[in-house]
Length: 358
Image (cartoon, rainbow, N blue to C red; front, top):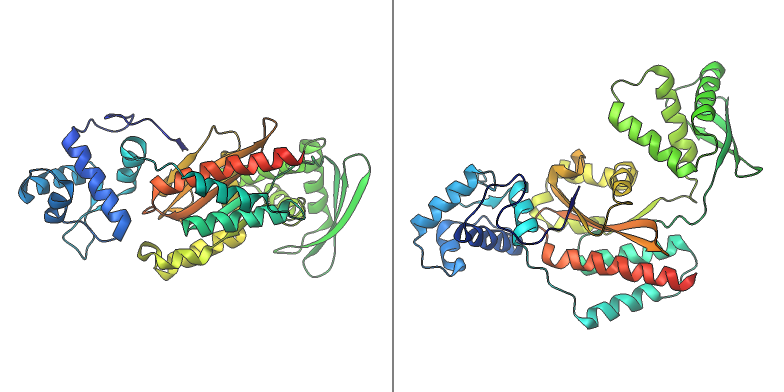
């Protein structure tokens, strides 16, 4: 997880680059972000505005490639940035473009429009983020009400179905039927219920869910039979506790316009991630306690479906308490100078709107 850094010539994990090399790297990344075409030495020498021959520029590009900042696509003699190159660009070379006052006011008016509830507000803001950036907008729903788990019971039904009996808060009882991947015996379900009651009674439902999802990701290959049952039961039992949606995603089809993500297998993985949302929620949950804008580039997200993408997020708060996270997902070749301020300002405006409603 990364935050924005001030512009410096050296950063942790990066070798020192002289000003000429930094200038050439910045110029190459900016050009590639604009048009998506590999950049050759002649083009870079011309764009950089320095009195350098293409041969000299070619040597610098070779050095940057050796350092892992650039790579050569198979189909071109030019170079494109790697995730490591984008990371150095974002941390040390990026010049952000502050939003014009008219843009901020336009965003404010859109966010301030009357809505029925938090779900509609989240949909409106995710649509807004997608429309402004032409990328995917994601908003975690505000969670105002704490739902405390008192007791859970599972009863087997026919055809891979399980009846869930939930006791929440003081005395609220809910019943729901979930569909499982396989039939479970009553003894297995009793063990799972006993485990959940022993470990999580008295805790907020969302904390229970986040804890189990974290365990699933960290130890999915080592879970014993009991924990596999617990995870499947809990994932479905608590998935809809916030009213059906934990986060809202808008603008998925925007990604189809980017050649970087045009591979059908990549798109299918991305769309599955957007539909399932579990990995997105886990990633955004990491940002709940982060300070300000967070940027994940490529593999930094930790999720295979997002390896060709960057994620820019920011938390939003009411009276100092973080309610959720919003953000934008797009190709690593995104206009960071534009996207980062949009995400930052939108989070602040959403927080202001929620504060004014209290």
